[in-house]
Image 1 (cartoon, rainbow, N blue to C red):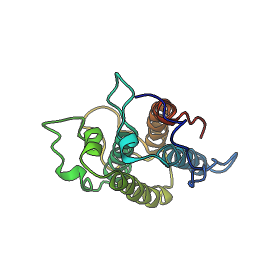
Image 2: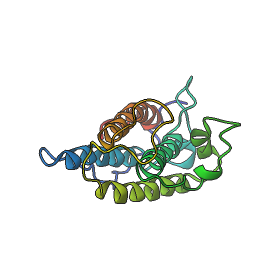
Image 3: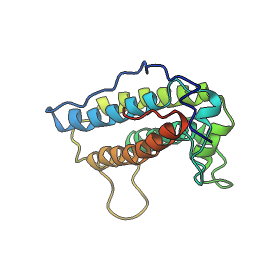
Length: 184
């Protein structure tokens, strides 16, 4: 797909970028960086058509809508399931993982992009409730892996930051390819 910036003007994004604090508690700084990444992802997906949100930058099959659904899964998995010990939320609880381990990415092709965005925003709201109640970040998560040393809350927060950063780089490239937009 060629760059369409000459024919489709890009409106100013309405989602403000959340700036992480320069100081604060460890929890405030780490969750501040996660909130910043969340806001950047939302901005990267604003002002585009459904077709654009579903357009990949070849040879990858990754799309902006797919990043939204994948990050909704990441939020639910790490904060809902691992940290809080809750059962996976829908649609993850009934997902056909045994048939498709990329189902969280592929879901975006099967639902309206507005639904993908809403799924992301709802999952983020649940994650914020969970992280707001965290105290000692050295405490192990409620649902550790079956073997090895359990993850602690600090590790999960840093891991989620790492996960966002990886995919925000992808989102930057996809968005620039779609309409020439760069920056946050």
